[in-house]
Image (tube, rainbow, N blue to C red; front, top):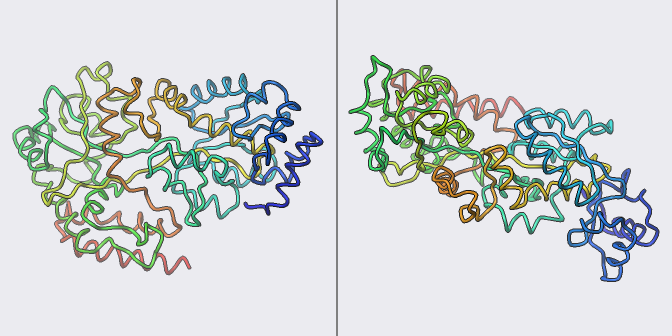
Length: 445
């Protein structure tokens, strides 16, 4: 939501000269706060504010008088956000209450609770909900800290939380993608240097009758299989996944990528339905699966303490044509509600929990790796698995977020059983998927 600059300046002047708390509430609270226009005005604001709030000023932005915040996130983030909330309150005088609302539910909930005045001030969303949130008018732009965000977070994350209108909305938290985990007791580095090496290793390791396999991933899931399409030049939608009239899932590169995937059946002798997440995780834990393509969310589970063996990780190796697979990436980010009575305090908190110091604490308490740049140089992140993911982040693509994306997930589902279980030529399967997408998009208009 944007408000004309004269209106914002009037609010700022009232705040600075009259110290009225009302300027930070109601309709005015949804405006984009501007920093003071002069050094004298900034000084006056500091003198009129409590010491704790004055200390919280960040280049001219300070929390509203009497501000208190509600933050929504998944239960896994409770310890981290409550710890950060206590720090934030000590620094600013602004209390922070954690409420368990995961990113999958937050958008629908804020649409209902926000107008009623009982919603969160800051909440988590996955990046593929950014455009829906912006179009519904439930999030404020990340305006005050935009330059800081663009400078300090990986480009993939910044792009992912920017709407198709070109406006940056989110405060990135982390990037989620996948790579190859491997059992160091079974696999040598040279065994995973290329897909040909992986195939050779798997041929010597496989004992299908004992459910013992060299390599596996979740075969029925477009999220994982898309890496081979995108790495070879295929794409979902044109113009950085914003043009639904341009679908690139059956171009030559996409077809070649799926033919490469299909070729892996030579050393993965099981049906699509048999390669579920639960099955392969169980096999990996028991030492019966040597190389496991899986996501960053498994870092906390794949430890020597839990498995009894040391786990290594490497980015997806280049395909035989030399092109690197390009996995989908999901970005989780904080957003400030447009219904917040305390938008400045909410901005400050979203920025605070996105800092370098917060990144370290988040990793220590939750195992989640921030999307901030430069973490590979921090002593807290000297872990080979994390370094492998940071390298993989260089070859990822944010999942599309335009409304037509639903047609993509639906139409691609039947492709993998067709080409893997039934031997259908990838061109035929992908041509059908694209036609199905076009039909679904047309029906939705």
